[in-house]
Length: 152
Picture (cartoon, rainbow, N blue to C red):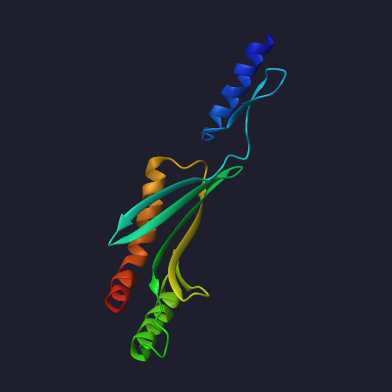
């Protein structure tokens, strides 16, 4: 088999794996051989819901895809600013910690409340897979986001 056919066969095998082929993923070396860069880079997506910007990252791995989603909800008030609000927000966040499995609320060192989610999806993510994972996350987190929104 000629070198050109071998190169095409190599690319076809890579495409069969379902790897996302984005900018910079296909490379040619000095000998003229094409290859698909592995691991591929994560793709980033964003959407707005209820006034919050959600960020989604899809990172292809060997046999699965790492799905991550997060949003900045707002700042936790300092105790001196609003002790009642801080106590209410803390109670809501404690309840969320006990009742949620797909979503997690965290407060970072700058007192930013964030909601995070992560899942390992078998194979490579298709559009229906992406929508399914987003809906699973949003269905679980949204009631808490609405309540938190009343105090932020």
